[in-house]
Image (tube, rainbow, N blue to C red; front, side, top):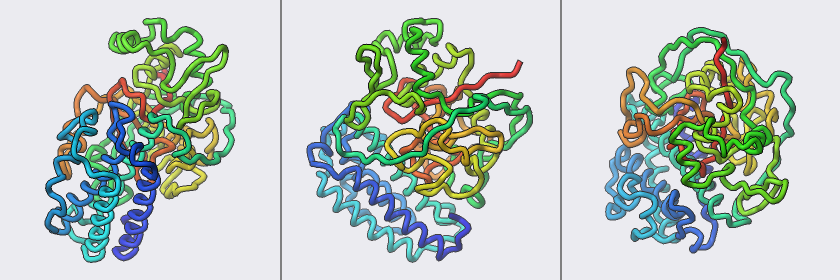
Amino acid sequence: MGNAGPTGLKERIAAELAAVRERSLAYTDADDDMLVRQHSLLMSPLVWDLAHVGNYEELWVLREVGGIEPLRPEIDHLYDAFKYPRKDRPSLPLLDPAEARKYISGVRGRVLDVLDRVDLTAPDPLRSGGYVFGLVLQHEHQHDETMLATLQLSRRPGLVRDGELPPGRPAADPEVHIPAGVFTMGTGGGTGANPWAYDNERPAHRLYLPGYRIDRHPVTNGAYLEFVEDGGYRDPRWWLPQGWEWVERNGVEAPLFWTRDGDIWWRVRFGREEPVPPEEPVQHVSWYEADAYARWAGKRLPTEAEWEKACGGRTYPWGEADPGHQGRWANLGHRAARPAPAGAFPDGASPYGVEQLIGDVWEWTDSWFQPYPGYRCFPYEEYSKVFFGETHRVLRGGSWATHPSAVRTTFRNWDYPIRRQIFAGFRCARSEE
């Protein structure tokens, strides 16, 4: 986006703002009870997410960049993601659905006025290259993906559209060799290929990695089912102590939303019950489950450095071309409400031949979420800095629900190792002897 020139960039930002708002309104096009109800203690009511994206936009675009007086300062604390935990948000005096839609519409109109007059070539890092607009765009798309997770947890049918995906194809070699050597991890400053990259993706730095092998495709439901049927959830050999304690305490027997009926495994997907498709990447598994499967398979999870190196040092594994909404390279942007079969996007392979690194499922890695050497917080600590440490595991690559503008090979996601409601799967790696 940073190479379009100021006028072209503004037009592109305006179009992206319209598209993301259309998406947010589509996911909240439901009756008021559906929007105000809490469908899981892990998630906010949908109406909270809807007003929150507008409040975030007001804080950063209108107040920080536009210098505009607060529109509704009395609601700031209600939509501060760090003020109240998700489980407590239904009890807050939130805007009702009609009020939330009116509020975010009023904010958006003023945001477009700010966009019209702001200098995107200014040296201020919030203005330069339209960074603040990239910030709010990615933020809203991330909440749209959160809304999809909430809609899945609601088990209400008929609210989420599906779509068509290309067929999969078998891999001649299920693993890919990545040679030893130095590569550049992360991204640079505010100009170049990733002008809207977050602070946790920076700075770019050189790393040496020994040679290793990594799965060509994410682990599929069919492969994971072999672990389940082999008693993987009943054998502590494969689990870290914390993971085994989690399995026993919660009675976990399979990925979230899976149930067995005789010899057939079924899943619930957005309110529809269907047989588990063996060719799709497994999703709704925790880090503990991914780690246990990898041990059972005689492998391990890749580090995030190994995952990123396998992408080949590009903005996307296939190169610099924007994946778009219906690209031939990846399953992104809610093209369909599920992962694509393994092997469905050969054109999206990295230079090494690793496929489906972007889209389909977020991929758990073996790494804790830590800052890179030389990390500098920008523009606020609560996006990245407060999560650093050995509590959150890194996920990479985005899912079918992730918008193309909110993912790239350097993008880092993170969550607690017990989380399963997210659209997360994994692939395995192994060290060379």
